[in-house]
Image 1 (cartoon, rainbow over the protein chains, first blue to last red):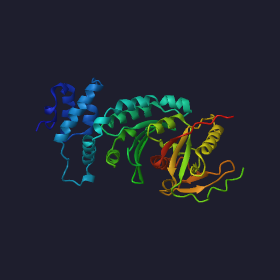
Image 2: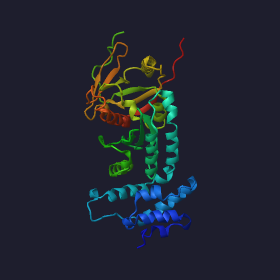
Image 3: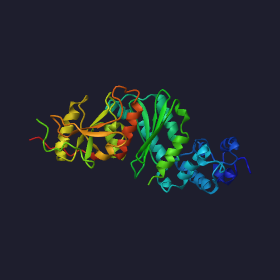
Length: 218
Length: 150
């Protein structure tokens, strides 16, 4: 098996850059498993315009669809972080909504840029730059999620709000300027949440798991 | 004005409760399909949310009450619509719904949260989680056109 597990070899040649090869080879410990981080953030060449990114995503999705296998299949699924990542990514790949909504990142970042308008017009507490930067990073990390989020300021914090389209359920990520974060999930009439001293711990297994469940609600 | 005697004291499970909304941010997001959880979060040190019972008077009357209430708030805000949640959903997960009629609003109701009122910072996440639940159950209804004054 090649260091990239054969994935890169199968990519369209025009997407093979030296940088992407280098980054993918850094993931050699995965031994062919696919890390979400690799494909969502690190391997997408930054010089791509929106159309190229879409084409890139389609190629990646197609490849993953044909090559992904559950990692650590011998472990109980809940014991494996990779298993949760795999579930989340697989759900994103297989979702029929993916093609229709995979443009939400640009809209979400634009929405993030408009929060000052609301802060002024409604007299809301300002949101610090760290919270804004972290929110943007999280949006980029979550860009393969099929549900488009809504972004808004909340008493000095920033909220990334994913709502299920056809059920009273949602996942809310709240980023504070002091570096903390909270992830709230409400599904099937029950709420769960996780607090983080540092928002850089997100996305984590809890968030991926809740997003996976939210995405698959009917 | 005395409380309207025609409004039953007990709140039925299928009654709609309206949380009036004036902030541009909340209106824009609600009209886009997502009611922000902050619509159902009171940042003051209180453990109840004020809502109105929507099924006992015409919308024009409910809008008049909401307009007057928003106009009294800081900033003289303009009432734009309601986030509507059914009473039985509002009363889930430890929350309770109780009619609390007032002289100027016989439809006033409290959604009481199972959190202490005097520990705002400690229960901030609790209140926000309840706000998220209520927002998930809620639907948006724009305010009716204001009737011109004669």
